[in-house]
Image (tube, rainbow, N blue to C red; front, side):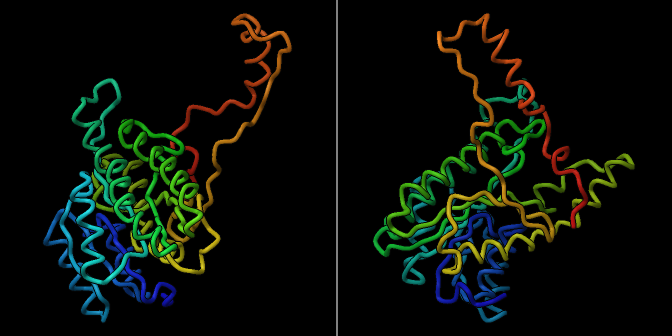
Length: 295
């Protein structure tokens, strides 16, 4: 990778393996100093050792993203070790998959705490530094489970859509300080996706396709978004799927109907809904919308 982030300092949460590890390695290879955050000290240190062996700079951090105090510690670790903070990559995640009508409060809260609250806490901890230096880049991991939909992931989907709204708000509120905020919906075979069943021939074929989507493929876009080359790129939603980069649409009105005398429930049923129905979105899941093989 190029040295487009040379001299910058990055925090990557959930960087002990999978996508986060690939991002940490990619940033370090491009010249950034990296705080490798993971709740596993062993995994975090292994990534740090790998970065240092390749001539890069990194430090391990095992604070949780899920509370304000510990998230502040992560960012402070970067400032104390490397003198500043330039890039935040909110990648830490967990899964507690369950069909909605069977999901309990703990399963809901555990996922929201890490994905959505964690993204807020870590981002908020960096905000004063970004504001003061009038620069900074946030990269948040969203998911097509939220953007499109999936079975058994109401907690994860809600958190990932919340992150999209958070990212847009950060981009709007902090643009005056030259701070950027973007989202990536990554497709990758990691420990989080390796629990997908592979018993039937169809399931085995699906898993083989998923395994083509290497976790390290996400890193180049993250490095770019953290670099000065991306100075004009903010409030966008990207996706990376093997060698494919997609730009996602964002909600905008697609159809409008007007009734000068005002609407009644009856006139809505008779006129408004039939007029708009051709523009309705189907009840679809991510694999049905993005159904082509990884490239």
